[in-house]
Image (cartoon, rainbow, N blue to C red):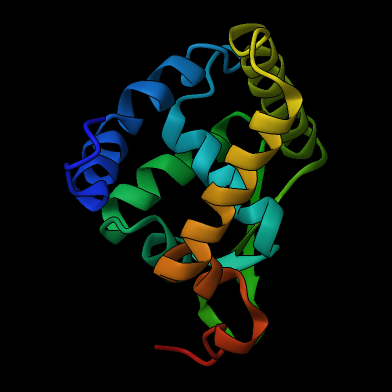
Length: 158
């Protein structure tokens, strides 16, 4: 990057390339675990049991899209749905033991891929990048806001 160039523009360009990195990492996912499947598993793994509306909101997709992804996970035994005791019309989703194992396997495969692809990076650089990305997420507020218990939505029906 040229010293006179605006660092925010360069950051914007680099963040625009992150999709290619994510696609490369997705190649390491276990068979039948698509990127959207991994997102469903990750959100349920982090947040625990939730309604479809909450999952769709966290994924930033329409309910019908989230429903298709959840159906894929339910059909494979990775996610279980049960009636919401507070509202019988709604259903709660949660990871099954099989889903927890798949999520752990997915995390491990991604970590191994990163270790192989970044094997010439000093560990301090890897740790610094992880810290900076976490800081960026917090400062932009998108991901951490949803995961912070102070900002969780009510469990009452919408």
